[in-house]
Amino acid sequence: MNKNNYRSDVIIVGGGLAGIVTALELLDAGKSVLLVDRDRESEFGGLAKWAFGGMFFVDTPHQRKNGIRDSVDLAQKDWFSYAAFDEAEFWGKKWAEQYVHFCTPHAYDWLRGYGLKFFRVLHWVERGLEADGNSVPRFHMVWGTGWELVRILSGHLLEHRNRHLLELLFEHRVTEVLGGREGVQGVRGTNEQTGESFEASAEVVVAATGGINGSIEKVRENWYKPWGEPPEVILNGSHGYALGDLHEAVQQLDGNVVNLDKQWNYAAGIPHYSPRHPDHGLSLVPCKSALWLNFEGKRMGPRPLVTAYDTRFLVERICQEPKKYSWQLLNRKIALKEFAISGSEHNEAMRDKKLIAFLKNVLFGNRALVDKILQNCPDMIAADTLEELVKKMNALTGDKAVRLENVRQAMQQYDAGIEQGPPYADEQHRRILHARQWRGDRVRTCNLQKIGDPKAGPFIAIREFVLSRKSLGGIQTDLESRVLTHPDAAGQQQAIPGLYAVGEAAGFGGGGMHGYRSLEGTFLGGCVITARTAGRSIVGRKLE
Image (cartoon, rainbow, N blue to C red; front, side, top):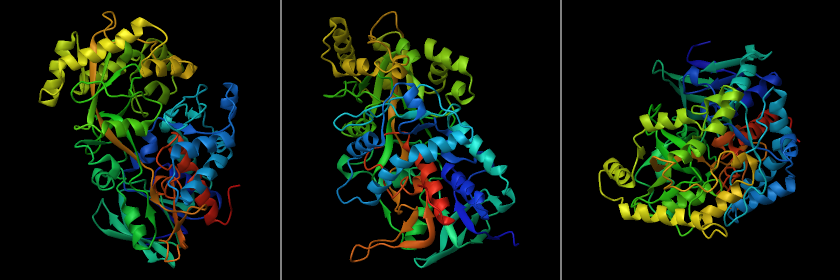
C-alpha cells in the first residue's frame, strides 16, 4: 500500500472518546477501521482525556444507594424544561428522548462492563433557576476522571482481539470527504508530519472531530446574537483542533449543519499558566460563597450569580455588562473549602485514584491547588486588606475601573445579611443553604462564611473570563447517527449513504440534543451513545 493511500471498510476521523467507542463497536463486528487523528499519538483520547469525567445517567444503582428516586420520565421532563428547545426543533428533541432512554443501559452499564468505576457520591449540578433543571443528582463522576475513561477504552481498543483490523494515523488532518450526497468514497487531507497530501478510501466515513469551539474565530462568528457583541477576551477551554473542519467538509456534500450559535461556554475561565494551545484557559468551578463582581467591583445582580444552578445564565449576565469579564471576591478560608478547577489535570488525587488524598483535600482543603494558582496565575490575587487588593486588581487590568467603595459595600452588605441571621433575604445565602442540604455539596461549600472575617483571610480576588467549551449544535443526524441533507423545498431530508457523525461533531446527537442548556454530564455520555449508535448502524444492528 502506498504510504499516502489507504483503504478500509470504515474511516473514523477523530480520535477522541466518540471515535474510540465507534472503533470498538466496529472491531467487535469484524470491520476494518482506519482511525485518522490530527493530534499526536500521546494525546490519543482528545478532550475527554482532560475532562473531569462527570456523566449523566438515570435511575442507576449509584443513585438508589444514595436514596435518590429517579426515572426516565422525570429525567425527560427535566431535560425538555431546561433545554428550552426551539419550537421547530425536531431531531434534537428526538435525540434527547433517545439519550434519556439509552444512557443507563448503553453507557453506564456498558462502561462498568469494561471495568470503569464511578465515585459513590453524586454531584448535583444545573439545578435550574427559571426553568427546572436536574431535580435530583445525576452527575456520576468517573473514579479516575476522564483520564481513566480514556485509558480503559483506548486500552481495550489497542488490545482488541481484532487489533489487526485497526490502523491508526496520527498528525493527519482531514479536510475533505470524497463523494457526494449519493454516497461517500473516502477522505482527503494532509500528513502534517511530512506536508504531503494523502487519501483514504472507504464506503463509510464517521465524523468524530468535536465541535467548533476550539476556534475562537468561529465562536465569535456564531455568537448568540441576543447577547450582543462577544466578549473582547474569550479563552479556549475546548480542544485546540476542534476547528469545524469536518463540519465544512460535510456541508460540501450537502450535509446539514445547524444550531452553531448554541454553545456551552463557562463564565469562570482564567488563562492557563502553561498553555498547550493559543488562548488556552482553565475552567474554574466558581466558589458558591464568593461574591461575583463586575468590572467596577459592583456586585452583579439583581439576582446574584451562584454556580451549579444555571451555567448559561451566568454567561448571559456577564455579557450584559459594558466590559464582559468579572471578578470573584472571597477569602482564603472559602478558597480552601470551595476552590476547584474542572478536569483531570488539577484533580490529581481523583485522577490517580488516591482515595485518602482525595478525602483529605475535601475535608481539610486543597492548599496545594490554591497556592499553585496564586503563585502561577496573575488573575488570582491575594492581599491582607481590601485597599491593597483593589490596588492589585487595578494594576492587573491597567486601569482604575475597580472602585474600593463598590467592593467594600458589596462585602459589607453580604456579611451583614449573614450576621442578621434567618430568615435570609439574600438569595445567595438561601442558595448556599439549599446546596448544603445535599451531602455532595455540604462537604465542599462553606456554611455562610463572611468575606470580611478577619480570621479567614487574606482576601482573594479572581479575574474571570468567558471560556469557550462545547458546541451544542453541529452536523444534523437521524437516530442512527447518519448525516442528513439540507431540507429540500418540501422540507424533506435524506440520509447521505455511508456518512455518519458522532459526539460533539453531531451536537452530541441530531445537531443539537441539548437545546440551549445542558444538564451537564451529557457530553461524555453523548459521545458514548452516538458512537455506539453509529457503530451498530454501520453493521446493520441497533441499540434498543
